[in-house]
Image (cartoon, rainbow, N blue to C red; front, top):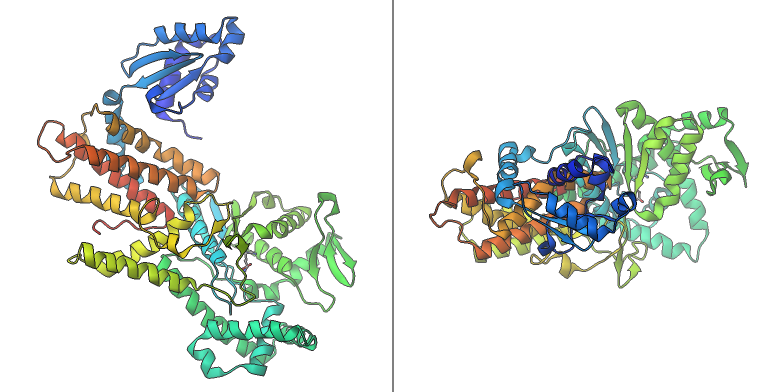
Length: 565
Ligand code: ARG
């Protein structure tokens, strides 16, 4: 991890006194941030030293506090067994603000990813089915992880592994042939196809021959039957068109759309490799790789009728991606319910001797729940994401009409705000937590929301517009506590990005942005920024650095930050 500059400063001063007892890194690791900011900016606990020195930690803290007299510290205090420091904001602020202003949107960038590639399997919806809330999560989390990785220097490949293969398409084709109506499907493809698919399951409950027919139809598809292939292609194209509308609204793009079907004719190679490595075993007529040694259920490779499976396709696609992109890491942003599947796939690759499988990671996320229960698409109760997005954009548009009727590019701004609300609503939650589905929450623009941060950013921009040009050297230090709080937050931005990357967790960044926006609004509420006095340019320089961090932070979440709203 990159070292924190303020913590380093304190470490240097402490280490100067403690060389005999602790290394620089040990001191650095021990430093904490006090829970209450009125207890200081940083705190050093003396318990470990007490063992070395044979004195009480309280005694040591007293002694140490009296020794630290750097001009960067406005106060050093022993609080029980801790040595707490109050940093001198006026002295330390300038280097931080200057750094933000001079680096501009490069502020917070890292180089540790340079020369490395991360492949990100994300979104990956299933054709002929509505785009689910789960796929929304995968899309926005994956997109943000890619943007954050880029910021850390990595090259990224966003892969949309479309679910366009499997027995369910056999079922759909049977349903369409029996009950489908071409013109209806043309009018409302996903809705109609989904209805047919649902009907299939209802009918199959009383008529088991349907399942058999479905499997047969899929086998025909795998073998390339022209009529069945034609239907499948048509369903696929219609679905992709509908999905692309959603991606356009969300502002997400992909480097590859190679989905499951793409691997249909590339699976023999994996099966061969597994055979040669003597990993394949027969079990109830199916071919499997046993993973008993890892306490995992066997990985199904081929069914008794020769049809391949989800896992087989994931094995083939992993080999292909390693070949094609030479990835250093591969992330699979997929719901946590597929945890075992990914463990199986990675373990099989490991058994085949592929070292790179160690760098493959499942990035799981929690479900969207409705009244505490899993939202099921099987039963046909679904909320269409496209409708939700359009509704959010409409609300944003209505707000603009009331608050800022002369705004230029109003529809563009409405799109940014509507999408921002939906994206942020997802990303602010810890990835692993389940989210209770609430349209109301998704369409709220106040409180802890994306639009709140967007508004804060636009407000800061409008202050800058009212003033003269802000220059890098304009910040000369402010002594009030609110501005120092903001500067301390700005200073954390690079580390927040690094942490979000290491934890594969955009919520770390989302929460940080909320905090920064709140801190700025507090400052703004108390301070007349544009008043003509000798601190005016310092205040403006601070406001400008806030715009830089907020807009770059939003960008890394996949949200745009309009300058006017
Ligand atoms: N299409 C799958 C689903 O909706 C997700 C695919 C995830 N990616 C993968 N490589 N298996 O459940």
